[in-house]
Length: 331
Image (cartoon, rainbow, N blue to C red):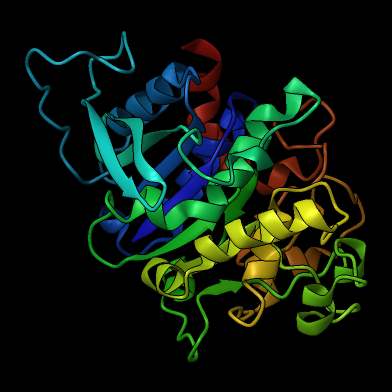
């Protein structure tokens, strides 16, 4: 089972507890493989050290063997003896995409250094504020997950995507095994924080013909995606076409890279139980405890993450933090 994250360095404190919770709730933890996408050039060293230390202490959860160190190979993630570096050559419709990858202690954990440079729609990433460049790069990665991941995953070509500020409370296999109807490629939760009128220009013909003003915007915090179906319906090509049209006449009003992805996926979305993404734990201190107890995935959307001084609902993730907190602050 392939579980995917996209993370900046600021997200690392939440990443390992989220991974730990996914392993703890899985009935076959040895079959869970994590793929962590980070922007090219990111220093993922601390994350690798965390995973390596945790793996050594919890071999019952990470059940695969440490990979053999390859001789005479330049280390892409230096200073960490548990890693096996390599280069991955991903053939894409826009040419050849080179990205670095390394294993962290276990072949169940792989870090992918994502370089968006070769992609035709890269102009989506440009931003006036350099501070948002990393986040926009990761948002862009969601538009080409098929190209990034299909050459690197084993077994089922489906993935479950989680944001790093989540805690898993149910076996993700249930989400992975969602039976998709004809034409559907992605299964997000039935969560509604914004409507499509907030994101899109309904004076645009393409928007007016395919969207409803009051429909909820697709939530990309937690979802299952069938990568071959995403590819077969040419969603990536559709995104590129929408970007070109948007330059001529405004299609989306929300300054988000996810907008063309959401529009390109219209008609291909099959929403699942809202319990798969119970949000606002980083915003609202008055959420219903019964709803949180029954949630499949808790999601700390908002600024008050559980690892910050003023974080909310810290008790909800203490079970998974106790294993990793000392590692985080002492490596």
